[in-house]
Length: 544
Image (cartoon, rainbow, N blue to C red; front, side):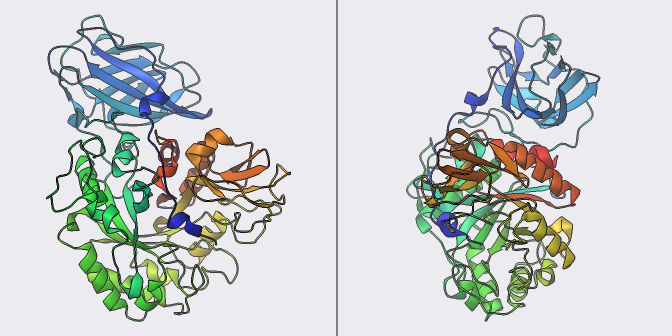
C-alpha cells in the first residue's frame, strides 16, 4: 500500500493548553480548604473521559485524601487511573494511590476516569469530610484506603510546568500495549517535541514510544537526523522537566528529552525504529549479511551517549520480498533472518519488534514473506492497517484508508484490517503478538460530488504539509465526520472527501482488538492527535 512522504517528511503541530477542554463543575477557590474539581476532558455521547483535580488550599501539607461523590443516573465510571475507586450503586469513593498521598500547601494532583454515557457532574461531593467546593472542616489525613483497581493510569497532570506530585506511570509489562510513533522531524515545522507527549497526557497512556526513524543506508543502522536526535539545544520552556540544555552537556536533542520523559514515567519504554517508507532500501543489503547489520545496529543503539534511552529496536521494512518505494527480491526468508540476527545480538531481554505490511490479499505482501517464522524472535508485530486507499490514486474511487472490515464496493479485496489480522493468524502468528494499527490522520480527495464512498475525484485534497493528508486535530474541526463505513469514518466538505478515525470509531476498533485477543494497538503518529490526546484516550478507554 502507498506510504508516501508521510513517513519521512510530514511535519507540524502547535500545542494548545489542555485546560481549554476542561469544563469545571465548580471553582475551587475557598481559602484554607482542600477541594476537588470535576472536569470533562472529552465526551463522545456513549462515553466520556473525566478529570478530578485535588487542590490543597491549606497552609499545611496533607497526607492523604478521600473523595466521596454520587453520579447522576445514566452515567457511571467504567475505568479509572491514579486513584483507587470503590462503588456502591451510584455512590463512589476515590482514595489516593500510595505514591500520591502527600500534597504540599498550594499543590494540586489530578486523577481521571472513563465513564459510560454522556458526561455529567456529580450531584454531591465531599473530600476528607468537607465539601468538595471548600468549607466545612476537612481532615489532614484521609480515612481508610480503598482496594486497588487494575485499571492502568491514563492522563498526566494538565500543566506545562513540572508536576508537583509524583506523576502517573504506565502499567508494568503484561497488559495491553499502547504504542505510539514519535517522528524525529516533527521538531521542525510541526513544533512537536517530546515535552508535548507529557503535556498532552499521552505519556501516561502509552506503554511504548517508537522513535522514527533511523536509516539503513548500506545495510547498516545509521543516524537519521543528528541535529534532531542529539544536537538540538532545548530551552527551559521547551524541555520536559523545565531545565534548559547547556552548551557543553554530552547529550541534547530528542534523545535527552526522551531520557527525561522516561525518568518522569519509569515504566515507559522507548524503541528506536529503523527504515520506514523512505529508508527501507538498505534492508536489501542487510539481508545479504544479517549478522553485520545486527552488529551495526547494536553499536549504534548501545552508544554510551544514549544507551539508557532505548529499550528496544524496531524493524520497519517496507517491504521484504515485495515492493514499496523500492522493490526487494531477497526471498521469503530474508525478514526472518534479519530479525533472528537482531535477536541473537541484542539478547532475550531487549525488545525487538516490527511494523509490517497489512496487505491481506491473496498472493499479496503478507504471502511474500515468512512473518510467522520471524514471530518467535519478535516481541510483537504491527501490521500497518492504514493507508489502504488514498489520493495516490488521484481519480478515486474514494475509499476509507483504514477500514476495519470489507464493504460493498471496496476497491480491492483483502485491503482491510480484519483481512490482514486473520491472514497473519492463519499463518501461525499468535494473536497476542499482533497490535492493531490506527492512523491519527486522514486521507482525502478533491473534485468529489458523491458523499458516500466510491465517488470519482480529480486529485488530492489540500493538506497542510502534503496534499491528500491531514491531521485528525485539523479535520475534526475543518471537515467533521458525516458518516461511517466498515468501522471507520468519512466526511464530505464542499468538493473534498476525507476518511479518518474518530474517538467513536477507535472505540469500535479497540473492541475488535479485544475480541480477537490482540496484544494491543499502535498508531502513527503522536502529533496528529489533539492537544489533550482525544484519540489516544479512546485507545486507552477501548482497550480497558
